[in-house]
Image (cartoon, rainbow, N blue to C red; front, side, top):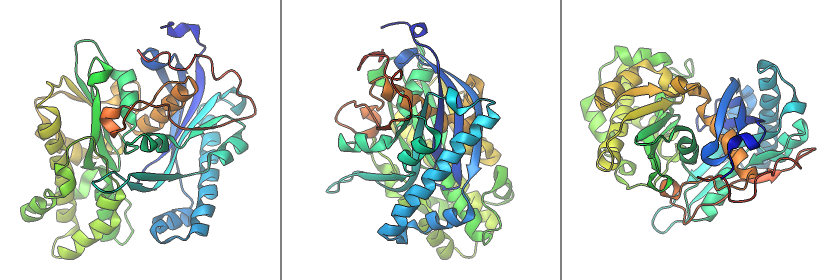
Length: 399
């Protein structure tokens, strides 16, 4: 394998919008190398909220007809393009210096494989709009190729976790606390790496805060309300019976199982609980479901040296306190320690995956997604210039 210094560094913008549908995370990163020789420097990160009209339409997408969905695909693409251009201001650079954009898009439906059912996933945010507005070659639609190869199309971050955090003689877990909680067991050898969605993350907490305050709150900031409440043990026990938690990895989930509709039903059936007690119980449910994932699927296979948390959930002090208690004595830190801001981790990940795609390298971990084989991910939409992007031959740099 050629050393990474034989390739110039690339400026890459990573764009990501999670299942919470709040807005677009944008990261400007410098990437040098590829595969296990990848090194990343985060230059700027910010989140750009959706305009209220688009956010409202996204919230009703399950009832959208095909014309609405078609239009939303373009409108969300415009928001992503604006986010790409806006992050350059914070990063004090210009579009003509950007080599590549990797856009995850906005997930509007994720249907994992189950017995008797094909998996499918749909992200909108038209990459042709992003490429047209920016002039930059854009890689998008990452999940679909893994689904076509028999996987769930999720989680995809495990490959990035491997190239960033693998260390000789150590086993780390890179754990993302987004709307959905997912983890990657980062072993020294790629063939030993695996990952899966543990289940709910911020999503049910945010949904409960929004529903129980009639929209006055978008989230339980730092877990302050949950911290004042008491856990309802009866409800907690019922929540922990959710069938997804007992499925063997590889597995993935989404809003269809832990989103607004299911949370609204929980609140309706437990109307006697205060907002503080409901948030305390749901936050504990998230923490206990994560512990269950470790106890049943990680710790029987590996002695874990360190857990590296990232994602918006790291800003919830109550949730992180619960996890510290439950996962003790395993050392816990955040990706900030390694130069990747916790909130920026997923946007950075899709910048890295875009770089791998144009290098011709597979970006999935079959043990995480359930795919039949490794595959190069994504759809490439050419920008005004793209000839220098395809430097390494296909299949090189995997380590």
